[in-house]
Structures are given as structure tokens and as C-alpha cells.
Length: 145
Image: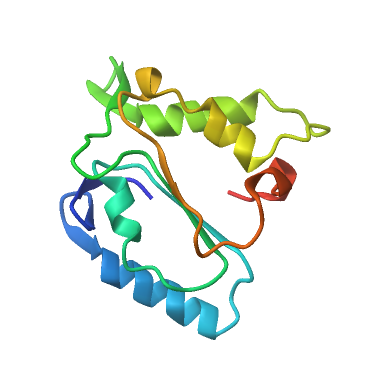
């Protein structure tokens, strides 16, 4: 998910707002209805880590582009339309996956280790307390976007 973020909220297109308790409730309902066994949530906003504060459902791994009090920055400008079209965290995440091939054994641990704060201009965050498996056991070929 991406948009404008703040302390425990995400705003889509400056219109709709998702708060941390809304996300937690949606995930809880999905878990209760057996819609997932394991769930990866990725958020690229300012203060992204705060959106995960209310999560309580087991099997959830949450990744955010920035910590509380941090901004998440755009990567580059599309001169044809005059605005930024991708943020740094999303750009570097996609670049990581594009470098892999179908025989790669890269894990989520590899992805997390690829996040360089000097490139992101923020601190990537991951919440693992609800997730049982070690990050090096989760292979990229099993992650579906």
C-alpha cells in the first residue's frame, strides 16, 4: 500500500483514510475467515511502521518504508507528467526482485538486507512478532504481488 502517511494512518489519493485499527480489523476478519495462512503487508508512506501497531493476527509479516517520525521519499520525477511516479522504498524493492531469476534462492532476509538507509533516506522496518518462520526460510518464489 502506498499513499500519504502519518502516525497510525494512511491516506489514499488525499481522500480516503485507513487507520491502524482499520487495518488490524480487516486482517483479523480475513484470518477468522481463513483467507490466509501467512500474509505479507508492505506499506510505503511516511511513518509506515506506525500502521502496524494494532495488528494482532498470527501469521502476519509487516514491512514499512519508514519509522515513526520519518518521511518516505520519492525516487524520481517523470518529466512528461511533472510528478514523481515511484517512491524510493518501492523502487528499491522492485529493483531487488527484478535482479532475481526463477532459480534464485533469495529470501525475505535478502530483501531486508538490501534496504540501505542512505538510498531510502529512511529506515525500513519489519514487524515479525506475529510471524513464526525465520526470514531466511521465506523464499522469493513464494511471494506473490
